[in-house]
Structure formats: C-alpha cells, structure tokens
Length: 147
Image (cartoon, rainbow, N blue to C red; front, side):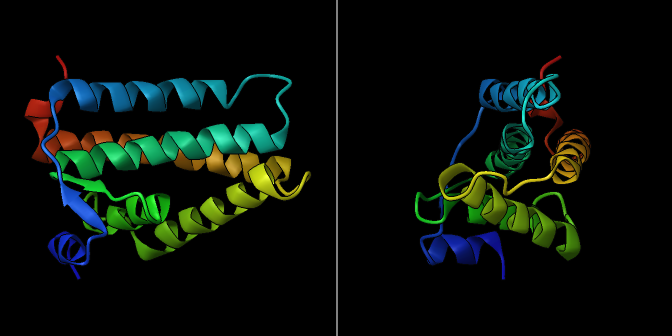
C-alpha cells in the first residue's frame, strides 16, 4: 500500500502545499497543545483539543508529501497516512486511531467517556507527534519550514 494507491482509491487527492500552509498547521498544533493543558478544563475537552493538535501535525505531514485527504473518513485517512509520511509505527497509529474513535464518543455520544489519564496520554502523544513531524519536515521538506 502507498499514498499513490490511496489516490487511485479516491481516499486522497494530490495537493500542492506552501510554506504558509505548513506554518499555519503547525501553529494550530502548538496552540492546541498549549490550550489542552489549560487548568480547569475537563478531561474530554483536554483530550479533544490534544487530538486536534495531533491531527493537525499529521495533516501538515500529509500536505508536505503532496496530498490531502478526501472528506469521507478524513480523520482516519490522515492518521493512517502517518505510516507513509513520518514512518510512525503501527502501534502508535493504532493508538491514535483508538483515540479518534474515543473522541467521537466523547464529543457526540457520552459524557464521561475520557479519563484524566487518557487526556494526559493524548496530550503527550500530540507533543511527541509534533516533534516527529517537525524532525521529518526538516529532513525531507526543509524548504517548507519558516525561518
């Protein structure tokens, strides 16, 4: 499987990114990591905000590689693409996909679906992914990074 096969399956489309787009996505990531640690927020909100931070990091990597996820199953595709962009291991991708499903439950279906520990784990994963994406960008697409 490859991202080109995903294009053929209409799961992704080709996308020409810019330094500004990557900068904006990483700025959203940084903002959300910071906001996910705001004192007084419940675990569901901290989890949701940190999840969004991770998703934006993954979106930046996918855009740098020249792709954008189609709307159907967008979050899932962006997460799964981390295997082909930054080379994220299957265990971490599976965990992030579990977080995607848990976020859906917490946002749309059930109060109390996320524990403090799960929120903290999501925050830590968002931080780690942010660093991994930046390292990968520096190695492969340094021209897309600002200053």
